[in-house]
Amino acid sequence: MPPPSSRARVAVVGTGGIVSGSHLPALRAHAERVELTAAVDIAPERLDAFREAAAAAGFDGVRGYADVGAMLAAERPDLVLIGTPPSLHREQTVAALGAGAWVLCEKPLTLSLAECDAVVAAEESSGAFASVVFQHRYGSGAVHARELIASGELGRPLVAHCQTTWFRDAAYYEVPWRGRWASEGGGPTMGHGIHQFDLLLHLLGEWSEIRAMAARLVHDVESEDVSAALVRFANGAVATVVNSVLSPDEVSRIRVDCAEATVELTHLYGHRNEDWVY
Image (cartoon, rainbow, N blue to C red):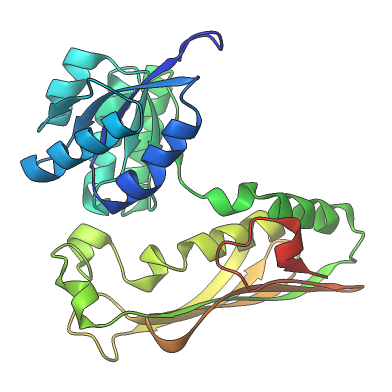
C-alpha cells in the first residue's frame, strides 16, 4: 500500500449491486485517500453503467476490463475490491495478492477451508493482505458490547441466541449462481446469517463444539433454505444459531445472557450504541 500521504489506487472486480450501491459511495466518501482507476466485469453493459456512475461520483477515467489478470497486469492497483459471486472469490483474491495488491472481498471469502488455506498461503508469499467484509463487528455498538463482555462487567457469558430468519421468494433464486453448492457454497447459512454469527464469534470468542442440521423445505434449489445449530464456546457459553429464508416476519437478532446482565441487538444494521439494549 502507498504511504498515508498518497492516494491508494483502487480497482473493483464485479460491478453489480453491492459494488455500485455500497463500495462506490464508500470510495466517494474517502476520495481524498483513494483513486478509483479500474473496474472489471464480464458484462459490457453493466461495466459501462458503473463507469458512468463512477464518473458522476467524481472518479473520471475509470478504465474497464473483462479479465482480472489483464487488469492487474496493466493497472498494478494498491487495493482490489471484490464483489463477484462467491465461487470466484478464491481465484480472484489469490490473483490480486499475487500482483501485490491488498484485497477487500465480499463475504464469504471462500467456499471451503481448503480455498481459505490457499488465500492464506497467497498472503504469506506475497506480503499483501486480504480482508473480508464483516463490517458489523466494527460498529461502535459491537465494540462497546465486546469490551463489556470481555471485561467481565456483565458477568460470565452463559447463553446466547443468534437468529437470521428472513424471507426470499422464488424470484430471488432466478439469479443463476444462487442456491447452488458450486457457486454459492450454501444457502442462508453462508449467504445471510454469516454476518450475525460472525458478530457472535466476535462477542464470545472461539467455539469448541457444534451440533447442527440443515434442510431444504420449500425452494427448488440445491442448498438448504433453513439451518439450525447448537454451539458451545471455549468459555463455556452455549448458543443457538438459526438461519432461514422462509420467514415472512423477518428478524435479525443477537442476544447474550451473562450472569449479571443481558445484551441484545435486534437491528440488522445495528452499528450504533443506541441500537443495542442492556
